[in-house]
Image (tube, rainbow, N blue to C red; front, side):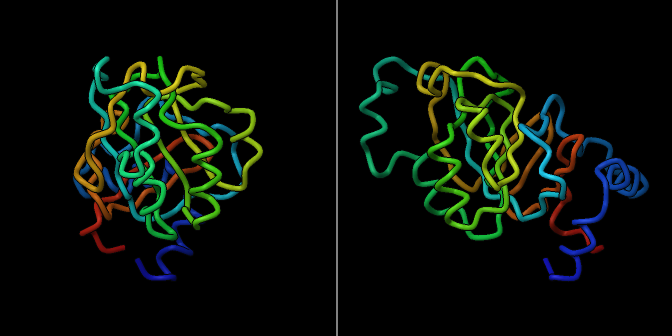
Length: 186
């Protein structure tokens, strides 16, 4: 994405983008039931870096799982490239958190452009105060391990009922999030 394209997308609403994409034949680009934790007053724009969850399994998803330095959730935070948006496929289930303020703060410090999940976030009041755009279904205090098992990084996922491929352009505004296929020229 060129700096010029990024600058343009910083000033375009999701409503305008969904109409422009519809004119090009794309109907399913707006993430359903995904909302800003708090509107930051400017758009979130960046290429997608993805994390996929599957249903948790009791023998694998204990608190000790977080001790492993190669836990996919930790790796996602540490390897999401600067300027990218971490997009998490949490199976459209907000009964457990996809992440909390510590991980999202770390993503912010590493230069992440934002974070999106079709699940929930724990510590949402603290996330609201951070200087990083964050989008989720709703607050959810339980840790992700009760419900989710992180498995894949930077692979095609579904988030909010929309296909998201690594490198697709993610744009979030005060209403929600739209996914622009990376191969389109704007």
